[in-house]
Length: 145
Image (cartoon, rainbow, N blue to C red):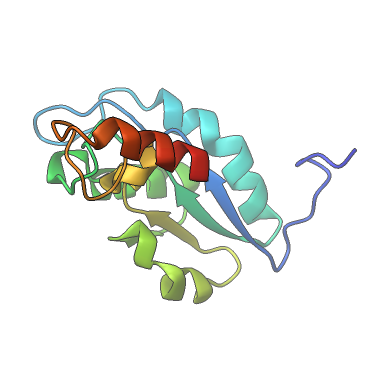
């Protein structure tokens, strides 16, 4: 069986879903980086092999709306320091294909909070929870997934 420790990422781009839902203080500084440190072995393996890295995560529960309080832009410097390389930032996770395509070996791109899109939380798009048709829309969305 192929496992990550046996795979060679040289010349490849890897998309890794991590849990960087780290606690921040009022100034937007990380108060506990355990989750970032926990992802480092995998992320560093990809870079050490000569791969490029695309990191995706969520932070908080922004309820499918852009909210600066939950922006992953706040942790770019901390992730850069932990990895020992500059981390680029894509301000819209759904519109990052050009930035991802431009990555060279050893480079890292952190995508903006996935939960800025309601689909990430399994919520129907274009309908409010208070709408009587919401439950039917939610069931239809789950069925299509």
